[in-house]
Amino acid sequence: MERTPPPGYYPFYLGHNYGFLAYSAAMEGRSADSLEASRKSAEALPKEIVCSMPGLDFFLSEPLLVMVRFGRWDQILEEKAPEEKYAVLRALRHHARGMAFASTKRSGEAKKELETLRGIAVPEDLLAGLNTGRLVLELAAKILEARIAEADESKDAIALWEQAVAIEDRLAYNEPADWFYPARHHLGALLLDSKRAKDAEAVYRADLAKNPGNGWSLYGLWQSLRLQKKTKEAAKAKQDFDQAWSRADLKLSRSAF
View 1 (cartoon, rainbow, N blue to C red):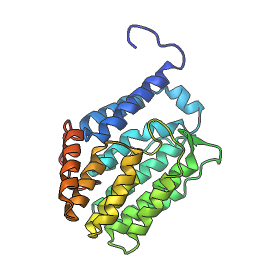
View 2: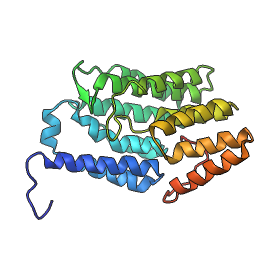
View 3: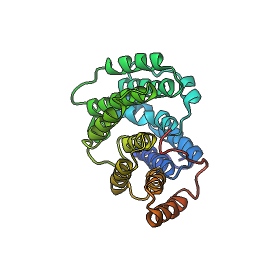
View 4: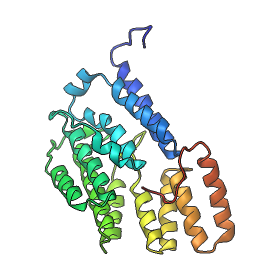
């Protein structure tokens, strides 16, 4: 890039390539690599293109979603607000801030972020990746609602996570996916917390069918099988998890932060 003037639209593809790296590194538990790649993705995107094509600011949100996935709550709250013209990015920042507040026992502030997120209107035809911005933001709001309910120990939390999964399943296929972290990782974790290991197993197997070999669901599958005393299957799941997580820079105690 420094030695050769990039042709026209190419920097957008460079940003896309970094986006792939951020997504795949996250699935392997490589938090530092994922965050670095997500920041390079956002930096590579030509701002004149982002400004001229509403919805492309969706791609600038990846660093925030990496931080959510890895539970970097303080870091999220230090992020500056984007310009008003970036509606999707603004909405996803409110999502990230809400997740940070809910996860640090600041439920009231999380609810305010959810209210603000829901109040951001985007045109019906605006795209965020290969999906409408409205659908992506609907999912962002439902995930935050579920996380707040979970933090408040509400009896509705599991049902809300199931609704989030249903919305995520409506997303059109894209590479990488237009939603950065699978809602099933959260649903499975809460089911395990609720001593519903059999139900959690089904959730993790469903996620592994969509995202083969990812460490988060392999960890959850291992735990759900272990709790059901399915010794042989649990040993295989642990072996698969150890392989998937071999380059990770963190240890898991749950399939979602």
